[in-house]
Image (tube, rainbow, N blue to C red; front, side):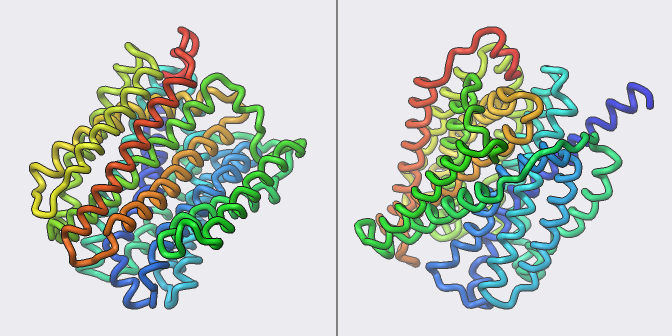
Length: 471
């Protein structure tokens, strides 16, 4: 194979990897417009409808470390292909479900497939482009830009499919894409030999159960009461399970997550930045979509179109601006600045009005927030996955994906509780809804600003070597 054909194949492989990131994020957003019809047909209550989202996110976030470990042991290409197969099976179950239990099971299986895909995709990206810092930055930018594209495409497709076809097709759409990916994997992806080692099942169970308990406690807190025994009992269970996970990792010779990996320079700080970004960004996207539909009265297609300007800015910022800025300023200044700008954008967005309009209440704030996201995402992602040893690429990829997904789940759960406490549960009352969404935007903005402060305090100012490692 000629050098030119190898280079061409490498960039085609990146297209498949970016498509994987696009899909796993799209599957979190495509269900939004379909939820009312799913509620009516499957018998969801208003309280448990959010678990159509949470079942996916919890399985995704909770099993990511296992996905990263399997990627290191079995080879990233094998795990990447297996993830697409599991995602397709979960999509069939979720689309064909006739009751609540089967629907949530299908969504959890989809999340398990995504947990195999995401860390192995990043490992494959590092295998393909890790030898060239300049190419790696470009590849990470394309990979990062696929996430907001997937989120916006999910809103569009979910609305079109729900309105003109039927809600099960928001899941069935994954199947042909999975088939194409399975065909492309052996043709484009580099192979890696399997390594000997054990799989930490106990660690996987405790971390997944702990995350699920934490999200459940926060989601149910507005209904059960923040001071109730149920809320604090489930939070205590979550803390005990997560503490048990850490204990198991400290005792095993081959843990799911080697705790000493966090001694790598800036790895913990970069993962915290990813956590903070998700905890602020995902609630913003979620409640902005609700504000557009439930307060401004937008239907599915205009609501998706309203998100296009910020999505376009993010994609351009990540692909065009972020790589150049990284070379000039380094990772830490960009991460801190990006989180501050995101926080400011959310602060402006908290000024939304019940009688507002897109041009005044949505567009300016969403563009500011998008600018912040585009500044911080690539530097924090690059720092997180470059800090680990090469043979632990799957683990590092799993950890950074966990950080983002846990941040999104807990951030959304917390801001949902905030929104409900300030009136967002009063459907049909534009003023009450706006008050709730405004409080959620402000809370998410404060999370972003807190993330900026903590990152500034704990992340080391990169020396030349560190800067080179993150570009």
